[in-house]
Amino acid sequence: MNQERAPIYEALLRFKQMRIVPFDVPGHKRGKGNRELTDFLGESCLSLDVNSMKPLDNLCHPVSVIKEAEALAADAFGARHAFFMVNGTTSAVQSMILTACKKGDKIILPRNVHRSVINAMILCGAIPVYMNPQVNPKLGIALGIAPAEAERAIRQHPDAKAVLINNPTYYGICSDLKAIVDLAHRHGMLALVDEAHGTHFYFGKGLPVSGMAAGADMAAVSMHKSGGSLTQSSFLLIGGGLSAGYTRQIINLTQTTSGSYLLLSSLDLSRKNMALNGEAIFEKVCQMANYTREEINKIGDYYAFSREIIDGAAVYDYDITKLSVYTLDVGLAGIEVYDILRDEYDIQVEFGDIGNFLAYLSVGDRRQDLERLVSALAEIRRRKKRDKTGMFNTEYLTPQVIISPQEAFYAEKRALPIEESGGQICSEFVMCYPPGIPILAPGERITGDILTYIRYAKEKGCSLTGPEDMDINYINVCVGGS
Image (tube, rainbow, N blue to C red; front, side):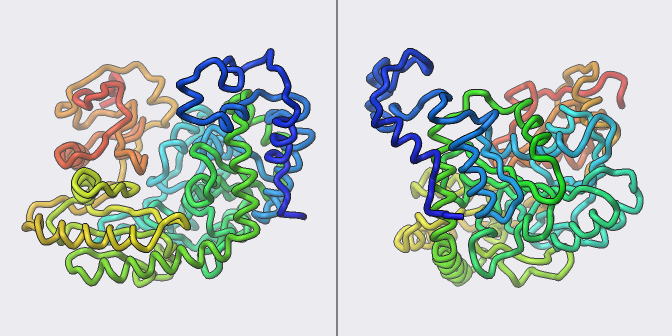
């Protein structure tokens, strides 16, 4: 297919030339209704914030330009079909699970999934079968899933409908995706991939295998992360024998009927850019990441890890575009370095947690910006290094799942002071965001280790979210569920 085309973008340009008088929504009427908003975002942006109409097609039932754009995206990603998602990758992940599972169906998945996965199980009533990833003893982070662990879970639960894998994790760690996909298929299960952080796998050379190349049935791809589209825009890819029509029906259960043409056109243009220039773009990103990683490791005490942690099992491959940095040998939690970089050096990295921070690199980064990051880290070490004794050193705690997420979320509940909740069954989420991987999910036992972790995360300044109580002083637990 002609990847130089961008059908949605082209249709919007034609529409703009028509000078149509709007008696439809949105109410700002191409920016005329709110001068401050137009001055802030620009006339070009507001004039293209339009509603579905015949010349622009309809996201819920595409028959023209959106349909053409979907075909181009599918071709670029090597998928049988691609859906434009404007409710974020959250909606793509949820659509995968709602397509694969109905109430009572089992789904095999790692516990270190994004909250969107567990939200989907609350919506559809699927039953999670968790695979516990191994943990790197130094870094304290959850790794990928070894094929042997996936096979164990599949053999113990042969009635499961699907296997879901994160690939890569937020830290860049990849499982042996092809082996796990093949395992799932041999046992009659669908293979789903949360590929939120792996868009570039489809376009860069020498990077880990992509979901579609591995033969997955579905993959959720955050085009807005490494692909360059606007925030909240993503693709849902399908392969194999799944029905595109049924998948679209599932998507339309939760996705907006008022799809933003700003988001849609950004997906269209970013797909075009990736298809035409992605290989060169990610070659540059890899070079920048490797250079910065080497410079950070020269400072001392920091550890910017890479492919040396590959073990052929739980770490089958590593995404070298990710600049993940271990900080505990400096005596600082990752979230503390994150805060210092922002507050004292005007540098915003992607996230910080207990032991690490992540700097997300893209083609938009410049050599001088990377040098500034390295210099800031060197100065932080010189000014703020302290004894690391007593620092928490693990990011992953094995959960005790007692009841299903849906049952717990909708159960009769009561609020307890969080310090008094030990032994109870949680009925809501507690997580650090980002990355949005729950410390606690509905249906799990609240243990002493978890309470210690939450207390420590609050003390270090992690952004804790999830509970009904926004101050995280109280937590909802299931009544009679201790």
